[in-house]
Image 1 (cartoon, rainbow, N blue to C red):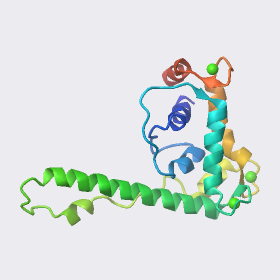
Image 2 (cartoon, rainbow, N blue to C red):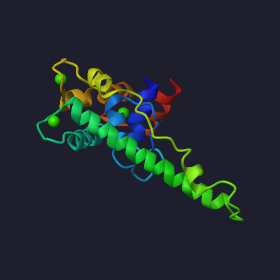
Image 3 (cartoon, helix red, strand yellow):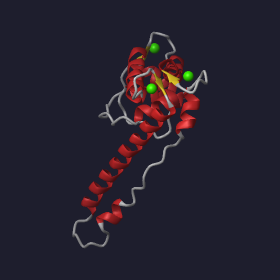
Image 4 (cartoon, rainbow, N blue to C red):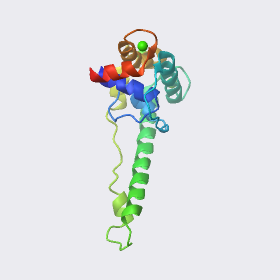
Amino acid sequence: MSFRLILVAAVAAGLAVPAIATPAVELAQATPAKPAAQALKPVTRAAVIQDLDNAFKSVDANHDGTLSKDEISARQAQGLQNATTRDRQILEARFDKLDINHDGQLSKQEFVAMAQPRHAPQTPEQLLQRLDANKDGKVSMEEYRRLELDAFDKADTNHDGTISPQEIQAARKK
Ligand SMILES: [Ca+2]
Ligand SMILES: [Ca+2]
Ligand SMILES: [Ca+2]
């Protein structure tokens, strides 16, 4: 529970999130990374819904209001590709720093090759199964919101519709 909440807070705050996440977060993650925010900020329920809905719409390629396995699969592939590209950029930058004397002991190609293509922690089928509450084989926007909002509501202990920095801290300690 506390883990999921941290994800909710992190996503809403635009922070980088760990690789393991709720399905909705995992898909949301597949969108290009937002710049990292520094301090914890209050997170409103409305903002969480807005983020989830935006993520949902970006996955819903044919705009029919539900997410099919193919749409989930396509987004996963796109996200993994972005992540792999980021890995390579980081490694290239690291190499440029290390290779001070340019003696060619380790070729850039070999070094960058260490970045293996990423693998999704869950198959599209598994993601669909976790999100698809009514088991009709598609994910509705309501279903997409559910896991995250459950976590949000548990964390919002005074039920004012906002997770304050204090509530975020409290949930982390649980
Ligand atoms: Ca669709
Ligand atoms: Ca469904
Ligand atoms: Ca609150």
